[in-house]
Image (cartoon, rainbow, N blue to C red; front, side):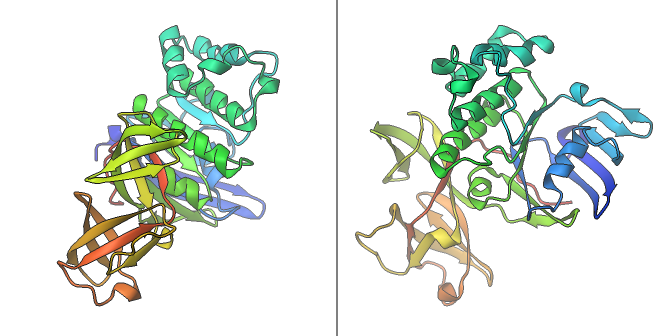
Length: 339
């Protein structure tokens, strides 16, 4: 991978009772989730990379541009980083439209960019609203829009779902995926919530005690096209199967469905009608001690081989009863294979 396609850093920061020391090269494509327990250094890492921690040492390079290190230090407002904080931090004396325009005007970005952000985030009905009258979910969308309207090169999202319930999360997470894809904008997404990581992540970097602990396996995904809507449900075509899901999806979009092992029941016989969201037939095409390769709806799915699947052989039919699914608008990205 070329240096121009990466965010490279080797940084350290010492505080009373906490020390951060992290080095990595992250692809400038798709969404990289940074996850770990509270106090592990996730937010601190973002702040160091954004230039918001004056006590930090080391080097940071965004593509070919050195942001700090070896005598260089580009101040935060010149780093081409769009930072979405845990709280919306909107200007209460400006309405939605003026909040969106603020960052764009300061960076000399034209009205066309603002109009595109409004469309991607479905902000049209909110444009004349007072900030103080927005719901928590609406305020987060506006905060994301204000950052996008400024035309950053990379997006930092610091636990932007904090304090939101499941329905509000389900409203906002697809907008983050759409924004990353529409504007070809790589993102670092900090979260400790598994549902958020499963929904958005193309790759997952884990941290603990101020250090990087490795790369976690990304979720298994299937893709389907939205072919219709019925009320609040979108109808997805997965091969020959038709799957209704409660998604804020647009007809013609392709959606990526992340499946987690604890949200899928696998059986060697047709389960018939049950309480699952949907069931899919799969064919085992290959296997090793750790994983099965499944052909599902014309797609290849790598699935962990549990004790219950220990005796399964190639050319066996299985059925997947999906109890939980984590869905986002689909944007293909380069896989990451570590260092």
